[in-house]
Length: 493
Image 1: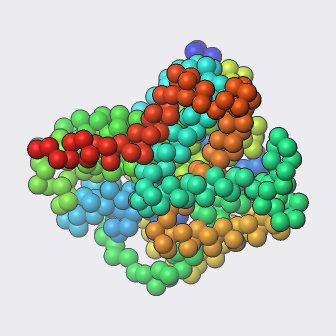
Image 2 (image 1 turned 45 degrees about the vertical axis):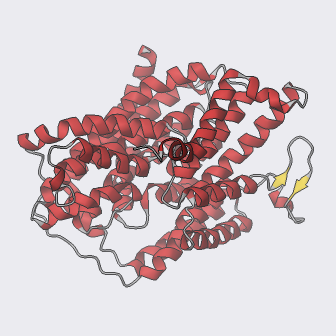
Image 3 (image 1 turned 90 degrees about the horizontal axis):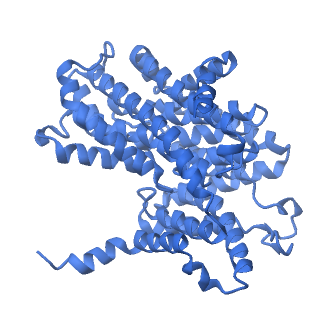
């Protein structure tokens, strides 16, 4: 454990890594305050540019974008009633009304402190929980991984606001995309249509750039002439003693909620912030203030969504199951750089793992300083005209996709999945389930094949394994639990 902590502390002593984290934190805050971008889009855009970096530096950059952009969404949520990221949507409920009362600085101060505490708490949990879970994961065999992956797919039902059925359809579409290419065991070609550049399947990077960045560009093109209502702000203020007295219990509760929700496969910061806000209201003595400028509402949402960032990294690094849309991108980064997620990551490359944890801790500290001293400046970035911003995003998308393999096919994949993502969003489908389904699809197929080999084709023996049976039951409950609860208790008073 001492060696792990020493490796974590080394992140603070590496000038190159510190400079990268500082620059990336600034970039992450900029991405977070620009409505429409967000952590997932920013990570997808940066992913191809990290391929030439050292593995620790590359994943640290992606993780820093994740934590800093998640926080920064609160700046525009409070000042212009427009969440920079979906995770900050709950912050608008009380942040903007408080700003309209002339207390924008106070609202941002509460958001900064709550976000930092949530982020630091989740990194501490990540350092403790990930190695413990890794020890348990040593017991996992193909049947357990197959059942776990099905559980992860079942959790797609609640990954976003698109609705359970639409989210599951998106996940199934993602799993189908994972079958494109040659089947590994037999070499049979599937859905290639004679294009042998698809022999290894769809590359994750261009697909993710298309689904998240390019589709968002098309969505935002309809809002080119939108004018945001801004709120004047003199300075960001730290919470007063009275504020701390009112919010400390809320922050601690939301830290626990956010970390737990983040650890659940395919949930993430958006779900955590909504639950954190709802629980803050439930336990508050001043429920009538919520929606009118309650500091507890801001603290509940912000502590939870930032706590979810560290929590979401636990299943991502230990089990290879993304805890959110952004960690799906980070998972791709891990695999591209040879850091194969799983229990062996915590024995064979433990120094690299804890350096990444240290980088996340450092990023939380840096965005706190930026939030207190530069929020007013960053807020002005949100006023960049859309006709200027999105052509830049388009150029970065195309350059990043082409730079991956110097292949025009990857550019076409970006454009095609940009259109797919646009029409999916237009008809109420979220794109995150598609991305997670694409990643988990390969795991489902591979572990099912290996399980059938283990049991000589007797597939029902998968459910006879205790741990696999537990995950299968959880998957069924995740899909039908609400329906069963209504059937059993709906008629009772």
